[in-house]
Amino acid sequence: MIRLKILAVAYACNPSKGSESGVGWGWVNAIAANHDITVITADYNATEIDKHEKELQDPALNRPRFLYVKNRPWHYRPCAIWLQIEDSFAKPLMNIAYQDWLRCAFEKARQEIATSHYDLIHLVTYVGWRFPGTFYKLGIPFVWGPIGGMKNTPWRLFPILGFKGTLYYGARNVINSAQLRTLQGPRRALRAAGAGVIAATSEIQAELWNRFGTKSRVISEVGPPQLEAENPRPRDRNDPFKICWSGQHLPGKALHLLLRAAARLPKDLRFSLEILGDGPYCRDWRSLAIRLKIDEHCHWHGWLSRDQSLAVMRESHVFVITSIKDLTSTVAVEAISLGLPVITLDHCGFADLVTEDCGIRISPRSTKQIVSELVKAVCTLYWDESMRTRLAQGAIRRSCAYSWRVKMEALTELYRATVASSGLMNAEVPRPESSLSKSSGTVKSTVV
Image (cartoon, rainbow, N blue to C red; front, side, top):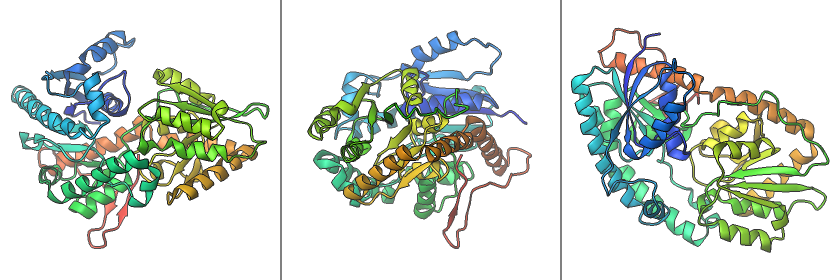
């Protein structure tokens, strides 16, 4: 296999953090296994990256090389004031700060390309579609993705979000719809990328086609942990049925749906809710659990280290996802990797991830309907251990399709197609597994 020389841009890229930072870190390190990669990232990541690199036990591993863009005072960094802005209606300030950082990163990339040869440049994070920068102007092939954030929250689900959630996601829907019609930067970047467009989910792939007529390859933004389960954890009938949930405590994560479902479980169904994460709605949801008289079943773990979180998940029997707005989420892929059957709403990236062989999908139509079907799904897996075990085994098998090895095989194929289509590499363009028919507008995708 030909090793390419990649210049990557990953504003969020950190070995000790999750969410976007974990996405960036996972991708650049997976790319390094097959290619030579230099990564342009924000300098607030430098301390954790340098510490991680010094602790590596295998110096023979091919590692990314990092270039740091100095964060100016108005650039985002994970400090108290920015974290408050991130969870408020002032979040557009982050977009302004990120656009300025992209301009600084462009200058860093331009200087690097002036002194070194690169086969292509790849914008990895942020995964949001709004701001691709102008890296496609650097004179080398451009790859963009995984791309997310294009889908609006369905209006029918707004009663689930509460007052504050309705205001926030309603405003986001209006702004997102307007930007999809008017922003020119993404259109220029998509045209320049050509074959090098990566959609995070099949929903985003369809949106890219319907909105912009852009073909894309679906490669999920998240991958599984390094230590997958070989066999699902057996359940002792004398143990409570451990139901795990994980995420930020925000309206869009909708933990209250699971709490309401738990309150309706039969009295003879012994269970515990293992709740990971924290956030602005934690107090409200704790109060709801008390009002529903299920607080004695709830174990509020808060934010734990990644290893501690995985330990809680390993001891659980089922994983539940109630997110109203998301892509795929790292914890969802971690759950199937650890052999947990998943009960999820049938949308976002979860519709790609969870099949009938590894979980139960619930159509998201209304609060009452979702709660009712959550109760039914939990009861089914509680009383039918053979089914739970079969789905757990299927989850472990399903995680293989989301492995970093499989993702990077797909990415290398896309890299070669992008470089070949630019005329800068003498290589046959491989036939992609995802294709779209412009005449019919139909979408076929293979998610990895």
